[in-house]
Length: 120
Length: 216
Image (cartoon, rainbow over all chains, first blue to last red; front, side):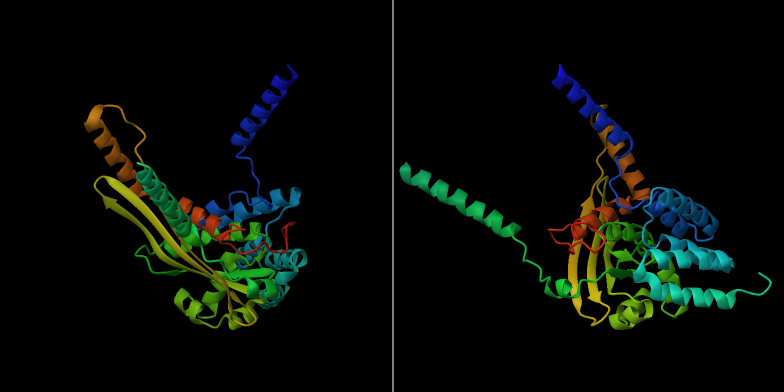
């Protein structure tokens, strides 16, 4: 009886895994690959990518598994949109979390500050 | 009779050895990679030798995840692409021909991953579509420009029609529909994912895990 119960629990776990696709990734990528794919299909839909990546950042911050590059990617999209303040915030977050990125992020922050007009 | 049996055994043995020999892969030289222990990987836009012009961009959406999950810091791939364009390097061939050390300095990257798309096509033959993806990966040191690791992956897939009812005509019609669907929207991404997974499997053909994996 007990054995049967364990089998049932095991099968249930497998079932839940199948439904949830049993994410075994280290980082919380969300639908990052699809978002990037769709953006390359429709490059003028940058706003959709910004919204998608913002969602990934929020979710992965909660789960404490923000993927490398994610803050920077979002920051650069804000920079392209002309929102240098948000861009600088995200570049700084990337730099704080990943020391490997510091050289590039420092450069990007400097550039973003140059484009930061007084009227902003 | 006994001699025949012996010959048969000898043949079986030799074919078994032949099979084993075929599967033996020359062990890769990891010495430079293990000596350098890169922490970060800069993935630059892929060069394209296929006839599908959308291949490099679409491929780019598949590659960050497996490399980062392998324990390396991966530079923001879309940002890198735009920064290179700003530097006048919008052509991937120019990027691949530039010294790796220059890219290493520009981005502060320990290593650079180059991908050449050799094939990314759907072939339509006799009601069957075969989708092919062939990728060559090269990891170079950002400090010395030396090649640290290389891999070559070819994956192909022929979608099979799922319906088999309705006799021969039914089979032919459903095969034609399957092929037409596959031809209209070939699932290259799934193949690229598979190629990436195979290329990064370690132990196997892949690079050893990076600093952010516990097994490092």
